[in-house]
Length: 566
Ligand SMILES: [Zn+2]
Image 1 (cartoon, helix red, strand yellow):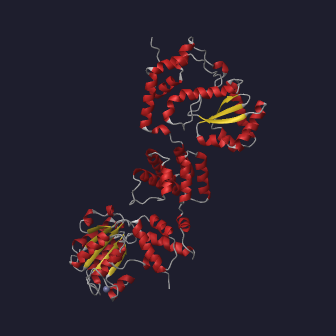
Image 2 (cartoon, rainbow, N blue to C red; image 1 turned 90 degrees about the vertical axis):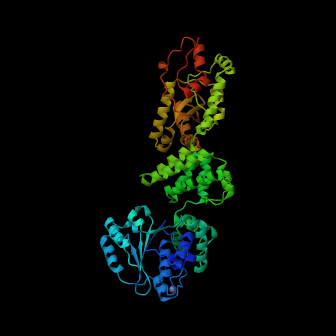
Image 3 (cartoon, rainbow, N blue to C red; image 1 turned 60 degrees about the horizontal axis):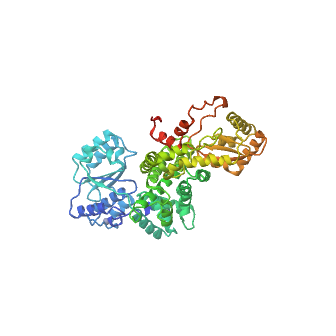
């Protein structure tokens, strides 16, 4: 005997077994009991939520030998014929493949004849929104003056495409997406009845993935059962559905939480090598971020289905993100997932999205900006004035080679006021190397030669990575390369790349040089030749004051120029 798909074997045969649509079965049962049967019904709702099943149950309720009854017997010849699809009184029409006016004209001809076995002729028109305008008009004629023995059941997933004239002549029933719990319970019944061996978490995964459609859930279960004869586990379901899986999503979320760009890129690479789809990766990350957002907002909420309800994970990850960061992350992932649909290189889309989450600014929120402004205001007024003039007269470190370096972007906004200090520290630390300053033009030559050498020796990937940075200082012990992005910086710092660079630099400089990498917010201006350096202003103190880090920070934040007040 031919195999009958699970969803057909387990199609509900009476209103009691209709899953998740109690509001509809109750109303229909009442209507049948009191004999108020409409001429046309419109069943609308997502696919796989029981529209066709309900239509068939209604047909049986009307035509059962013991009917019309809200509880068809399912044993009389009429019921059996409807179940097997051989009834002469129940017509199932698929409007997706019979959408023209001719089919509807044929229908109008047959409508006139009385039913053969039962009391009613029932026309079930599936996907009715697919009909052409002419076909709708022809159908409308029949709906306007239907013979008393005819019941139309129009089913659609897109009720907004049904003309208002048709709408107004139908009793409308909206089918809901079926809840995950309901689907899971129904799956459990089926598993028991069909003698399958399925793990609980596998069932839950199938139920979650079905997005409210029981038919989809049963189809997946069917496929899993066909895959092999052993126990159906969550791992097998995930494989079948092409899902990424919790462990990988946790790993990626860890990387994003720690702003670890290299770990994020490596994880993405591993997933792609495993054949996972880029969009699915982004979507599951968004789902997990949503879970974290909801958990943060309402930790005790139970009715909402989460991507994972493992408390330790929710607690751990939600503590690492702010609410705004999670909202931004969800938006970024969704936008990227949409873009990946059309992108010729979806992988790049994912990389851009993941890196932008890794490089999210700590100070993006309004509160922290306000905090920074207040801090600056306090420092600029009153007590700060003394500090500024005091510091202005302190000797500045020699900056022939040093380019002022901003602190790492990772630093918290609260310490913005210490920008000045950290800059001084960086400069002083550099001095401890007893730098023998090398002219800026030399630095540029060394850098250019190094890049050329990398290319000529075939170290293309090293070149591609390193060339995203700039050599900002070089003395007889150390070369400092500044990057604006974390990923190339961390990659260059790894032993293999650094060793290559140090060898090349040693060849160019004639002595061993240690490579150091750092992050800077913006790329420094191209180094000017020594001769081009502008002469110092006449009043060195004035220059020192306007050059004070706090003032520079203020100018950057508020714009404008510093004017000397006499
Ligand atoms: Zn019956």
